[in-house]
Image 1 (tube, rainbow, N blue to C red):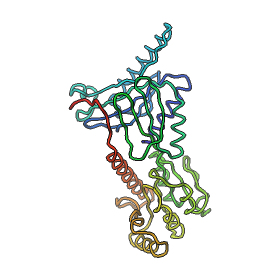
Image 2 (image 1 turned 30 degrees about the vertical axis):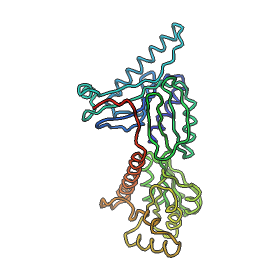
Image 3 (image 1 turned 120 degrees about the vertical axis):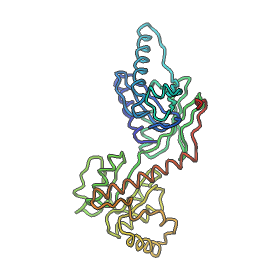
Image 4 (image 1 turned 90 degrees about the vertical axis):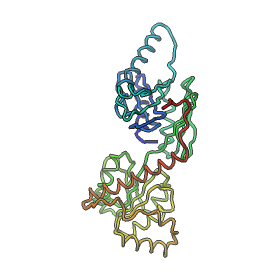
Length: 343
């Protein structure tokens, strides 16, 4: 469900539409140490250009050579009057120690990949549209025909492969809502964009938000509680209150702590957080479980002093929580793959 993989699909679609032959390569399962998780995607164009990664560079060169060879064979078949359509196939790297060493796979790692010539890009439009609307989607690839269909997915689903059908799950892009448009928020927004978050900022104070002009950062108009409620935070959403103004921060937290957001944080010292929790409990009837979801003081304790350092600590904690959530979800629905290599 990595948003990087959504970007790979978008590039593969654009290449295909412009007349290039394209191959998708999906990580199905790994054994030992592997740089990229199951579901990771690589797109290879007929001229050797790539998008994404399946091994961090270990096997990509060989995959490019395989794809170009397949493209050439298919082109030759077309010239001679053939109508053969290349079908998906399995590729395994690192079964032996010698092969693992040859491809530089760490710790004797093994990769099971699916090599899939892209027959149509229409399904990619549908998938990207659904994920843009924050839906979870399962992609079903029929190995015998290369046909792709989509269906709704549930949180916690993971990649499955039985030799006949490969099912991969794609989720929406991770998004971060910042309450406040001051100097700290701008530092967090800039770094979050580099981490491929969809960054949203809400600050009704014109003197702060008027100067907010950052590529890839969207300003949401309105009061914080209305903005949080209207965006319907889901498990791919983080919300951080950074105004240091209780009137604004508390408004956002009232809605955020009752939502499905995977992370809710607020700026302020330990004393400020204790006072805030007491205030929310007494005046807004919030439960202990809801208040326990609040990360505050926000960020990891790294001795941060400057806005940039504080931004690093905030995003480090958000990434930590995000990745822990992913591990928990994947453990609840473990990867089912038949025919795994022994070892």
